[in-house]
Image (cartoon, rainbow, N blue to C red; front, side, top):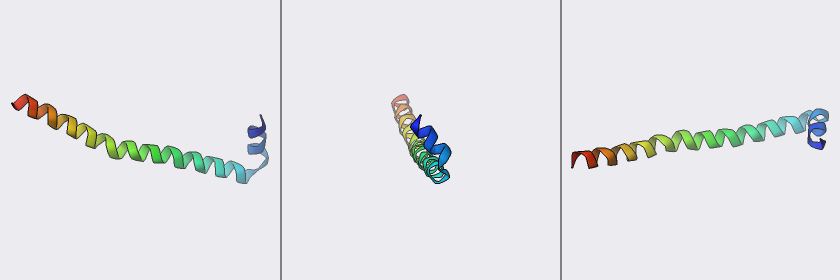
Length: 53
């Protein structure tokens, strides 16, 4: 419970922890939002080309 107590006692530590967690989650979501449509488009293009052959 040391981390919880440190978060309760120090507002700066709490803000830094929440900010770091937000950066990590935001970075992950940014990569997913950027790469997922590209991967889907490539997959659909390959399926369409194989269907048309």
